[in-house]
Length: 605
Image 1 (cartoon, rainbow, N blue to C red):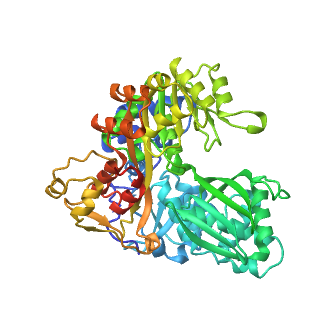
Image 2: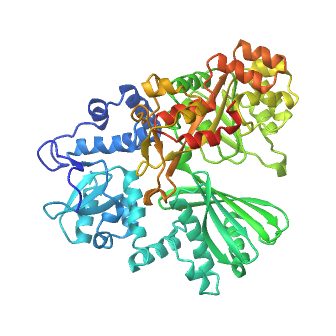
């Protein structure tokens, strides 16, 4: 039974009739009823005239609206009820989803949810105009249905969750086999016992597929396959933390590694040298790229697979955790005609996501954007992207040098690793180009000293750099189980927060998209529940340190001052350092004090 209070009642007093009066335009509804700016509609209409497609889908693709806003607008246009929150996947009756093939549900974005008070089957659909789909569902289920509009992302997520419960049924097995034969894309999870009880290659293939499918389902960023003396250990990295996922007997080691290598296009006979490859698959309704790296060890080859989920990387600047003051400054930097913006931080801190968000923000038909990356993680529409290739001497420096002959406005360099790349990037910035890149340092000020240590003249560094952005990823508390608590004064002092101001509500917090501060004087304490796997955390956000090049910083760079002196001068000029930005997000309920102190340990002075 679907819980009452989910849906918005029908407005208009009748079912949607395609042959009836002309429905209001989706753009008019979004502006008049959903608060979307008319300028956003005009921008999407311009893009639609160039590329075709539906206006609503174009608005979502340009990140001018989200999926929920589109679903609400479609429900208002069709006078069909809108369902903002779907019931829990484990509450959906198995007998209903058992009658609907998974291929049909995924392709047409439709899912039965349960029965309403009148006994009719409530069916979530993303496209209310697809009357044929609604009729087909009624025929397959054999009962009257009541359609409601829901966002496509939520429907896809629930399809993956609900049909996983039918893994062992004949329906899902046949659907999985058909998908494997026709597209070779979607994976379904198999139990480890299938591999142990068989001696041929097929169970190995299924087990490796299961490994990747489960990792994508759990939102893992990496899969680590490590051979031991007696078995093979598989671990997933979820929200930055490694945990054991599976084990397999040692006798299957070569077969498992060979299967991964074949999928990644690697040489299965080469076991002495490290290799790098790439796998692209569609899993659980999502396009997932996997970067594969092998390395020889004493116990055999070790494999690390990095999963790159397109939906998690292609985010807009307002969606990646910037406070309002930082967001305005970043937007000012990336709209400059020339200069260098460096994003700093360790591996896995979200630097690529930030650079892609910057490019998406300024991407327009009248701007020529070129990138050189290692590797190209995702294709960005309208942007020319080049991948480095050491075998043909296509490096960051050589690629960047050739770009200067392509009349670019904006250039993104995946990473400044050496003096040659840094020199070409600085030359590009001084000749009228905006350059975005990354460098591996612990904080923003360290980026300046790193360039000087590479052998770049201090006056070139001081004149070309516009800003440096340091960042870290911190885990979010699981809001299903986290509880607000009163922090100790010692903890607040360690975070750099004045306890008196904190408890009196004297802090004015900058807005962060989609966040509201918890009650004054509280922070979240993690607990652990089934939703977060008893970890207490679910998902991550970023904390930032944005250093702008002002006169004081420029003088210190020219004098080859140390990073600490540059950092102190920037803080005096108003820079919000990493730990304090983390403290602000603690007060907004976006993370916990423990996470912030752990991730900013080196910058706590």
